[in-house]
Image (tube, rainbow, N blue to C red; front, side):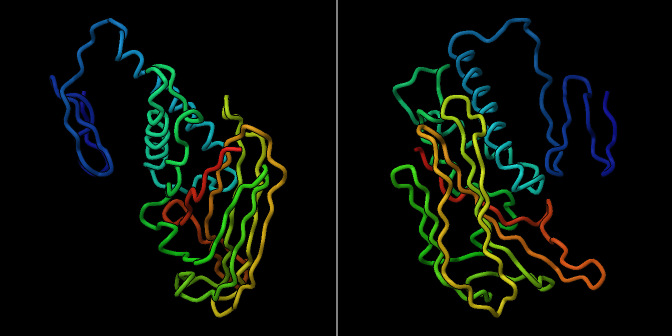
Length: 246
């Protein structure tokens, strides 16, 4: 049966048609037929790979949660999974049904945004930023910069900010989270010059997948409450900046 949702849109089944609300739009589809048969051959292999992509995505996002929390738009997981699946398929030597991100191209995750309305490059531009992995050692070199609107965008109500780099390390076979580390650059005011800084991650294990996720956290100065965070589901400029394989 069908019903009207809070925005007077039809949701549910009317005869052979199924109505769904996706991102504020009503989508109409024919009701799928039930054959009682499991997918076979190529379809079954594709389903296996897509299921592996979902599992891998869940594991990787789990490692980002201490940093991003739940501050991401509704399509973030789907975008992440699409990129994972794309990376899995980039290894032509693996047969369908046995695709894997580690053996594919995990760098396709670079540039993945948590919030498409407030993308990280719109808020932070740091010419000269360097990330390198040499002999199992990850270095992040942040150049000196002026914290004004040219290099770091300031919302009108922001009083302070933090430029953050979250390093999450995963097992190459199970994608189990092995470790994580947070590097922070405090920015007390938009008129300040921030000196250059260098961060070196804790020794990384061999054959590990490393994601460096960056973001800027903004704070207001409330008289009674002190420093209050501004980032939320609707505003969270964060991005998977770099992906490494040790």
